[in-house]
Amino acid sequence: MIRVQREDFDVGAELEALGRGKTDIGGITSFVGLVRDIAGGKRIDAITLEHYPGMTERQLGDIEAEARRRWPLADVLIIHRYGRLEPGDRIVLVATASAHRDAAFESCHFLIDWLKTKAPFWKLEETPEGERWVDAQASDDAAARRWIAD
Amino acid sequence: MKLLYFAWLRTKIGRAEESVELPAGVTNVASLLEWLRSRGPGFADALKNTVLVRVAVNHEYVGWDHPVKPGDEIALFPPVTGG
Image (cartoon, rainbow over all chains, first blue to last red; front, top):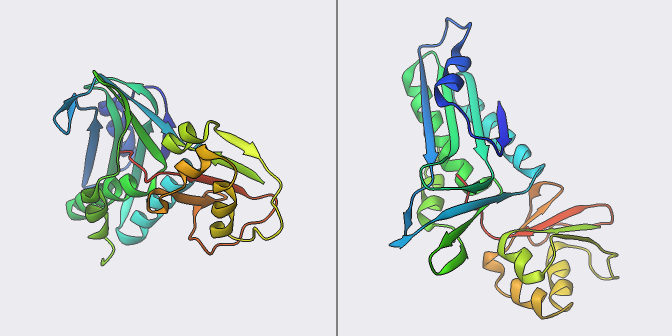
């Protein structure tokens, strides 16, 4: 399931809902992405996440489908926020449920790596020196590439 | 054709979206970018380094040789930084 929203989410409630009513799930892996207060040695007061409505849901749906193709997953949840967020705020939740832990761990890792290079979101940082758009990281591309050979 | 701009491409170009009539000769993404660059300094600056430009046609990532046609929704944006 894909959700793109301005509002915060309750991690515990979301994970509880993911496995509710199912008894064939052996484990759930989750990743929660947060806003840091420092980047590249500079203080971050807040970020604003812009996205491309329509394409975002389409790309996240494709990413979920790719994860389900690669691993036997009972359920997948991706929640990604947009709008203005402050340090400590939650940005993204990725959770995967499977009969076995390897599939849950690996697919969760895959989803966040893949999402970071495919989903059309952009971060604008507010710093003491003014606003600046975040540059894409080569390390994120490298992290996504390692899943290509699979 | 509907054109959409995001992040710093949007701020350099000075608008988030617009509807345009394609001039003759603009048939693919590469020729679209070439035409857009000729439309003013904001466009030229935003699109000068194509290594930093991603293009989506109707919500799918495409390459420079992908065809463009009336009715398409075409988005131009920098490499993504979500997650």
